[in-house]
Image (cartoon, rainbow, N blue to C red; front, side, top):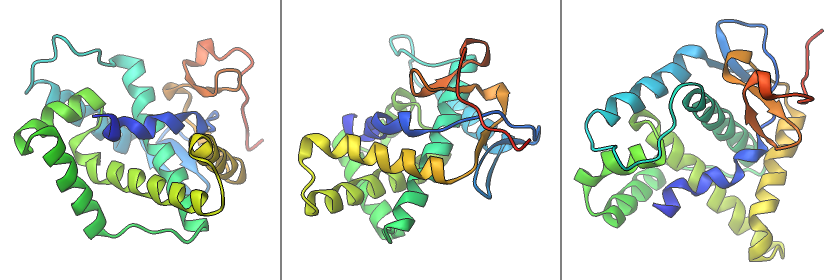
Length: 201
């Protein structure tokens, strides 16, 4: 499952701040992520957990699960924006091919629910996740072509997404956490300390 969860390696690229819009979970520039979108992902993950044996799985719950899904939706949007700036796109055929490859790697369609639960990916978000992975791969290929070494690809992609986050106006509803500049992650609001925030005011 290393390929499936590899996108988590650049999750530190998210720039999350306070949000005054209670109906919105977050925004990336003019792109809005609704609370219902995030909640649907959480509900989907919880429903899938009921179908598999999770006794030996280190799973996220409560606020931690909320933050992980918030992180996923903002990260995929930032990655998409960064890729668009580089004129990189992903077709449905490419997503379908990657899906088929992953299903083959994990041992068949019947193993997919368990794999998604382990990876913390909602079934309804699987295609969006695959799109992000493919975009990341294409960006990496482009970086290699410009002379970036293999050991610097992860950091280079992270920088691209961080730069995109800085370019966009990023906000997040405090119920999902806050951006901590010291750890470069989404943290609980009461643990943010001197977390960097942005405001419309």
